[in-house]
Amino acid sequence: MPQKLYTDSKIELTPAIARHYDLIMNSISFGKYSHFIHRAVRDMNIRHGDQILDLGCGTGKNAALMSERMGANGSITGVDLSPEMEKQFLARHGGDQRITFSKQRIDIPFDLGKKYDKVLISFVIHGFPHEVREQILKNAYQHLKPGGKLMILDFAEINMEEMPWHHRFIFRTVECVYAFDYIERDWKSILKEYGFTDFGESFYFRNYARLLTAFKKKE
Image 1: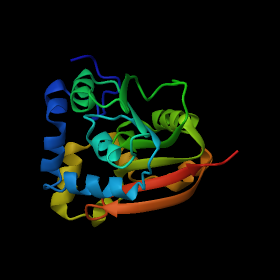
Image 2 (image 1 turned 60 degrees about the horizontal axis):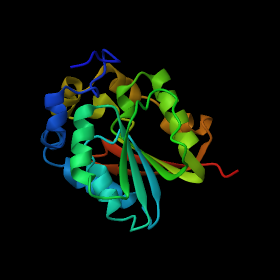
Image 3 (image 1 turned 135 degrees about the vertical axis):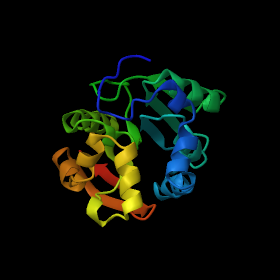
Image 4 (image 1 turned 90 degrees about the vertical axis):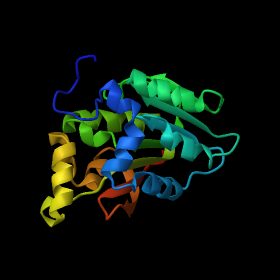
């Protein structure tokens, strides 16, 4: 396995874990992962013709669900660095001309040469140091059209002390130090600093997970 970019992160997966990622996520969420992902995609209000950028696209599960709603003229560009995720993503979507994959780090500046209607960041941004998250948000903002929609599906702002002990134990066992920092921050205020406005949110899995949406200001 290549050396990790961020030693304390748990989003840089071993090939074995990446190969079974969806199954593992379903197991640690008590079988509810797939269900709330379906609900979250429904709540994204994807429209026919949407051009969507999926940052940290993983296995392509989210892209599969989004593609059912975007119609024949929509498109999805999945971006990920993991060779195993690339393999799974292409196996899932290789025959769909609407869906493409770009092997690319999302934590450094990059330019795909295209603007999108929607940018999704799903269970990725919590696994980075905060100064790195700032670059990911800059990349998202840069790739959105004016009035475009940012969608962050990740942990909600959680008070750990209010969680049942067994949920707290699982979170502390499976998550990294960056996740503990992530859940304590005011993400609406952070996104305002980057030019996002008009916030919306939907909650899932006992309110531990949240779809936070915001729009890039129109020029």
